[in-house]
Length: 241
Image (tube, rainbow, N blue to C red; front, side, top):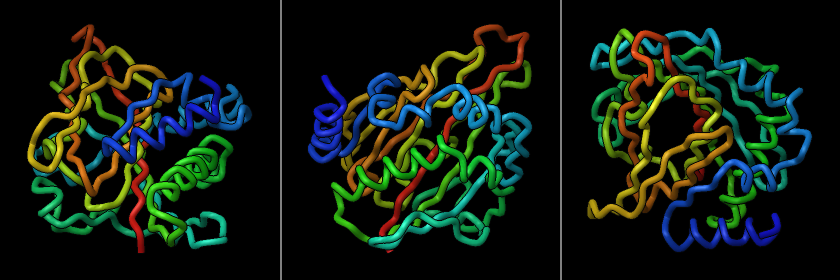
């Protein structure tokens, strides 16, 4: 299937089912070649190394590292970075860590302005506007590293099956190292399972209409328990304003 038809199929699946899973090669075909070239992508992926611990984990976990950024998009204008601000979710959407302002270290401007990140923003904005119309967006970007190994199991979604309180979500695999499991499951609003898949390879992607479905990810465990292991993903959320 060529890139144009793949894009149509993706949009149709998201509209019809409330979610879509896209394997890396199919995703790559819809991005500018320079955005996934090694010179751009390797720098982007390396930025997950050395991120600060998420110290807001109400379960006491020390398995999550993250950085955060906020962006805005208005009709007819480019996506612009907003001043750094806290991430906030009500406890209705995050019963574990919600209800407080959480301040995370910002995504490095060099990464946010880079070819890979900008291509991902442009692609998702275009795709989600096909679903919702050309509207102003509040966009949040999360770099997540979930660690597992000798210290214990890693929890990609410690809050369980959930919605994020936004309109649309992209979850993009950046890298998996020495891990197994981490299966994404999608439920409708009545709790019926709609699908499941595992993001395994770079740029495998899950796209979610957060208004219509719940999503969650099973814990990750190390293949070799004696060695550090991690799961790196980028999450972009879009909320109409």
